[in-house]
Length: 342
Ligand SMILES: *Cc1c(COP(=O)(O)O)cnc(C)c1O
Image (cartoon, rainbow, N blue to C red; front, side, top):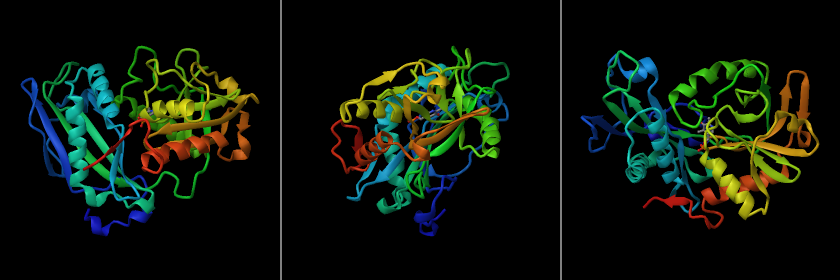
């Protein structure tokens, strides 16, 4: 879509074509020199491993336009590392982390006209994607791969201001089991979450909270966001021990809470029962798309707990202001997390 036709002030989270994408192919054991090409479809064999067996991984990042006009990325090297971990789990070739960051920068620069202006609160969402496109019949890795990076302009996550969402704890569905692929950003993990999301939305909830697959007691995560709770004044989040996606926002929030708010942070098992006790005062979830989203209430069957009258909690708001301030170059980046594009 022509950037001049886009109303950057009314964007949601929908697919919009931008001008340029990055592509590189893996053949005969090595990656070709990656290049920028016009955004568009490509041919794929019906026998492609990704189409038949789901051998695919992705990442999600955002480029922001700061008040100064500068373009920023948030910890892109962390996405590069995670992309590598996901590739290894799915028996796919890895892509060098530095080259990954370079490629991301190139695509963003090439699509600069699609970065929403600072005052719109939007971002250029960046989607690195790797697929096994070589044909295969038995369940085995493909011999050819494609790594693409495309971008989409998106609106702010809170168009009507910082608001809390209502969630349902699911005792019916789980997302990932020990020994599985929960920690990898692989396509296989997302199609199965569409039905639980649709069912809970029909009941008026924004998303489901998934519990661990073994005991159905400990919180794993929220749809595609990591979970946090303030319990007894401490900030707790489920351990990233295989079944949850190790979010970069999660990791950053844990660090900000400890270093800037002097909170005690705990990565531990959190029973859903703890959410129904008075000692749990705030809950929220985090992700590149969700940033920091306050949770106003949780429901499990006929039990409901409302937090802070359904309003965002104080610490949640402080963490949101600190994180987004750093990301938008409005608070000093003492952690060295922000990459400014030249
Ligand atoms: C991507 C993702 C997150 C958030 O990770 P960030 O690096 O913070 O964007 C959390 N949970 C799941 C399942 C995800 O896919």
